Length: 321
Image 1 (cartoon, rainbow, N blue to C red):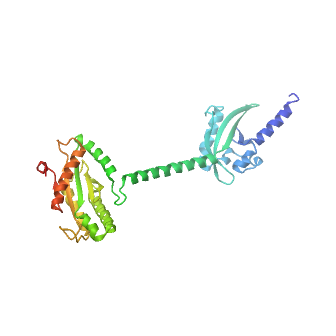
Image 2 (image 1 turned 135 degrees about the vertical axis):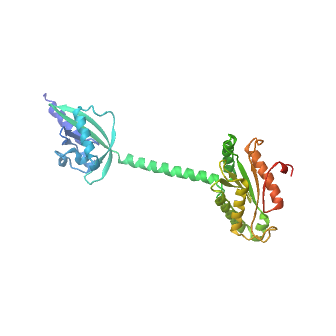
Image 3 (image 1 turned 120 degrees about the vertical axis):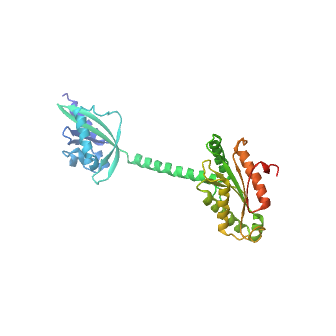
């Protein structure tokens, strides 16, 4: 050695002990040979307390067997068994028993005929916490977006789909129906003499009535259709193209469900209870689009409302009614 070498070695030792990252060097029998002071900050151990101990003291118990095999393979290949470019993420076991997320970079060194493995451990707790926070925020954002979408599609009073969402559902069902899988059916329901109901019982009771009727319709059709608020006291039911239920049967279920509510309506000319008039139309060959089916359902409703408390299905005889 020349005269500068002892000073250089002393400087290297000072650098080694003052690096911010923990450095652990182990021998080929997987015992700790050297460790710097940063290990105390990271894992709570005094450096001298680790010298001579098996490396697995720093490894959570559930990983120890696999870790020992991996380190043995690493030594056997002189460091070629693992790509040492960059870092891998690991959990290191602190003296307290806490598992510390860390990044690990390794190198295999030969010195005086002996192989040593040196690992550099960097504290990843802040990054892990940030990742956890971001992950939670992503989950919360997804939930918030789903809720916003629900609110955007939902009628605030009845909880049914609103008209905009109904139009989207209608177009989707039309595409299914148009390719010949099954016909699309539409029912439009109107509460008989609802203006008189509001005049008699007040708007708060009117809102309660609208919500109760909506709930009854939704329950009646949930297995074969989609219900939406069409506007005011009108509701629309889209029968799924694969529904086994016919329009007349569906209309009867809806009218019976509303009748079972037994909501008083003393101002009605057709019953002392709230009733529905319903118009329906089924997709036929001459319908060019979903709006044509909807228009014919509305034409049928116009006839039903003149008669009150009944169901009318559109056919060619209603044209011009």
